[in-house]
Image (cartoon, rainbow, N blue to C red):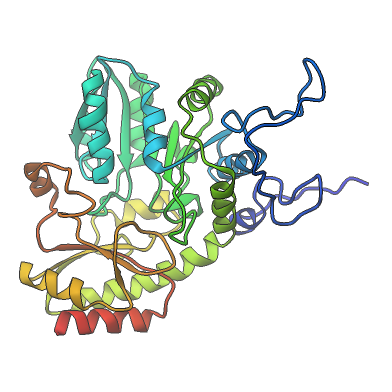
Length: 383
């Protein structure tokens, strides 16, 4: 008798993924199909897999899992978040105009301005948390937003931006790295494409690179599939398995990280040596109410400014439990200096306009004891 499938909550979906197990063997941990090529049974016959650049069973399970979590029809896995965005940009042609969040990851800015700008694609960087600044031109083909943004944690109205884009015939693309589908699902809000750096919360352990695109439109998916197999920056089987394993604990990790982040943000806000705190979960955050309308959580990313530049070096040299390192979203708490690390590629005038100054630090809160994280910040700030 066939077993009846039930509608699962998201915290069950992350555990079980697309198939939940390997139907061939019953393996609960989906196998790593570490093969570059696959044997054909005969002429004009296939097992469904031919060559791993085209498709691999482990990557396929991951792609179907991320699509399911994002309420999408088609998922694509890449060797990094930048590879995912690079594949996405192949949808556009010289002369196309794209509106982009001015506050976004510096690597994305570099890819747009130093690589694809030379291909004739025009990018305008605007404050996408202000709907009045989102002005379409005749050649505008897409709006690319981060929400919450990196590193200033601005919130953009996905529903309204998607609506405006649709009226203009443009795509609405959302980088959902910070909140993940566990807290926010842009496709359900009207977005056309979702981007992820899977390296971050989806993997969750700072041990592999990955990137994703998720889409509903069949024609767009067909084009992305052609681009993916032609450019070849696909996610390897072992890395696909690592991300599948990471996703299994996504809900418990994010709940713990968010709870820790709230405590840390409140503590930082009250510290005399901290000038400002940017955390979406604080009720006085400008995007707090909007975030409640479009997301079920606030995430675990905090940016804060200290009183003087001199204090930056002190904090970065003194932190012990917290690692001074690039990246975010892993189980370990990391601290980053955006102006010299993640956002160094962004021109000084744009950084100043956004608020990225030489006193700003970014904190990716992990799953350690919140008391230990706070104590480490306390000794680092107070010397």
